Length: 155
Image (cartoon, rainbow, N blue to C red; front, side, top):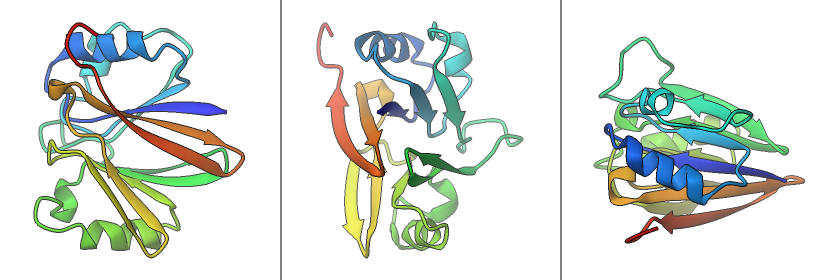
């Protein structure tokens, strides 16, 4: 089993990143979907956790804008979303996820949680860490479970 914390749009809210990581102590990896990915370097993250990042429109232009991962035999496509116009439509992103033979497409940028399933492809946006929103994706033996979570008050 592999637990992946999926976050996006942290926008310098390092305290929220640390609270989420502290709450989800059994994670194996973190996927940051852009907009101040350097927050992961500033936050206290326990050693041994895999870190994956894509850069968003508020990050340095030198980083990766999209990546593909395989987690327990599940192919995952990750991007910030600004390159695909996700604020107006998910169609272009859906096409790219499908072209990369991925079962899941994770994206950010809109600051709003999204779950959309179409033609064997699932698109997920965790929302924004600035509102305490994130996803825990649990992978095992070619299957997965996606959980939307929130920090809430005092968490």
